Amino acid sequence: MTGVTAFRLSTRLSESAAHGREPGLTEWVATLPSVLPGLVERWSLTVGEPYEPGGQCSWVAPATTAAGDAVVLKVGYRHAEAEHEAEGLRFWAGDGAVRVHADETFGDTSALLLERAEPGTLLARSLPSLEQDVVLAGLLRRLWRRPPEGHPFRTLASMCEFWAREFEQRVVAAPADFDRGLLREGVRLYRDLPLTSDDDVLLCTDLHPENIVAAQREPWLVIDPKPYVGDRTYDATQHMFNMDRLMSDPGALSDRMAGLLDLDPARLRLWLFARCAQESPEWHDMYDVAVKLAP
Image (cartoon, rainbow, N blue to C red):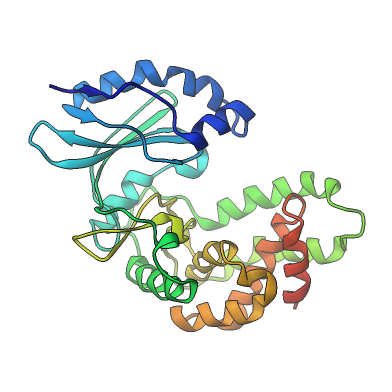
């Protein structure tokens, strides 16, 4: 018999809906109880309790197909950052990332039926941080490949231009003692760096130790990519944003990741500086990092 265990929201999704962090998310979350049964029936699933704490814009739970296969049902709110997740996973075809078995998009909903990684323990909770660096770098080096002609993926340059325009509106709220010249130089680089790459590949753009899970098919698999095509150097930055070492010695952390990923260390430092500057109006600690990395 197919069905859903008594429905409840995961913690992060509930909090995001309550606080209105994403326009339209609160209204979409209210539709989930009516959306889920149709997906469960379409894919003949028995679905369990959602994973905790879960994601901010998606409801994710373990499920079993009528054939007895262990899968994951991911039902997400369609927002710009999450476009093309299914296409990216199909491109990687299980080589370092979870496989996608099926997907549906309708209205404000994006639903995926994914391979279930067991035991599914997060890399962030499994290994010391230096070992996390090595695992993540090994996965990125495998995932970085040129997509075929006619691919659907957006460019990293388009994403950076969007956030750079947003920065122009947000910088007015930054603390008065933040050097506006330094911040604007960072955002200038944020716009320019994607345009000077000569080896564009498919990127995860959001890869960090909480988006890597332990599995049996491979030791570790990537989940929740946000695919864009562009400069591979950018892809090292999100991991560093999740490391305490970024605050204490960002230059050393950047150089370490450049070595593990065979990247130009000077270019990676520029990317890290640019990202920290762009994030500074809301994330004030990033300003201090940007000052340390300023060229």
